Length: 391
Image 1 (cartoon, rainbow, N blue to C red):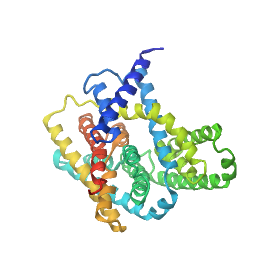
Image 2: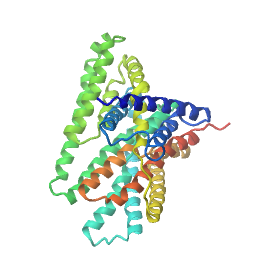
Image 3: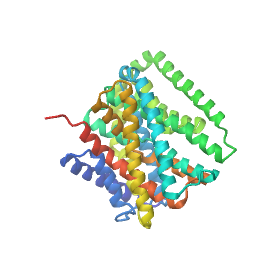
Image 4: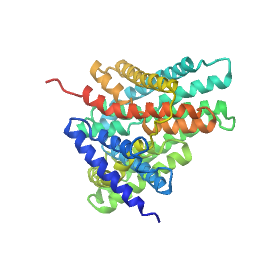
């Protein structure tokens, strides 16, 4: 065993907490400090941690657990009454938040790289950039809204619901576009899997509801938390392994199924202890550690700037317009649009799949990564601004 991993974990915990405290002192969300800590100790700055090693693989796996715990917590603390009230708004918001980024990403790539739409492969490459922009990583938003006490209520639940639906819509679009490139992938089979996944989620909620007396009897007992965590991890695995839906979506639904239980508060307390003390620090730090910004050409930098602007505008306008159509006021629509900006690890996963399909070249990865880091950093800052109460 390489005991350097102990030093790396200590660096991550100390740097994230110290910069998190500093961020809060200057009026910024704590998560901003976590992300900056990752950038500082990663290859973009001091290069203290090498993610491309066995120890780095351990950190990446721990990071994945971090986001699973975070989304499980989000599900646990979601108010189902508010979620039901806003299900239509969530769907319309998600739909508009997919259509506009898809079009915007396709067009901006086409303008920069002079896409010949009569060339089938070039058209798919441009379209896939749009697919990358459809992604939404709600983990940053969840952490920020929790800090501000704004996660529940119509705006918070609409953001969460839209982000989950965004993931499902994104999976469908990703599968369809990749199916156009790779004939071994059947778009129809993906649609069937999504339908089956909905059935599984509904069944899970029904089973948990029926088991409510047993769950209540386990209230404030350690096994309640242990069984809940095991269930969330199983749901995360089943989602990825059998349905092609992101593990974080499965974890969120596991928490959502338990959110109406009287023991949800106790489970959330136990899960948050594990998450906040260890896994969440590693998750947010690893986002920054993964970033390598060196070696980009001037054209790539310009494209990165344009792509980032389109990424921000299409989510704010698309999701904001969708929520306005569902009756939200102007400021609330803006809050929802801003909450959907962050692309995070979801966009990186989609881009990585595009590389495997031959739809994303190695030259495109740095601009995409830059877009991801900026949208991830700017989301908590903008949320702080748009949720600010008038004095």
